[in-house]
Amino acid sequence: MLQLKKMVSSYKLTLLSPMMLFFVTIHTIEDLSLLTIGKYAPLPTPLMYLLGLIFSWIVMSGVVHRYLGGSLHKHDNN
Image (tube, rainbow, N blue to C red):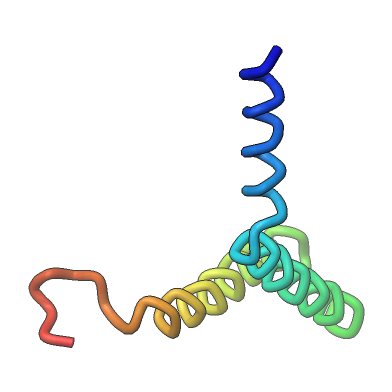
């Protein structure tokens, strides 16, 4: 029983961590942006899906680049 409480406590700490809340906030902004685009520029579902993937990839790449400071490839000189 003690191990279960420890696991639940650890999960709560992870779930409510600042990094997790940051990613939830970014994802919410992405969703709201895509819903706004969908409202004013109705597109077919496959195209909206593709647009969502591209938009999410661009936003998360920018976030990772900003917080990790550039390329993670070993052969790059950045």
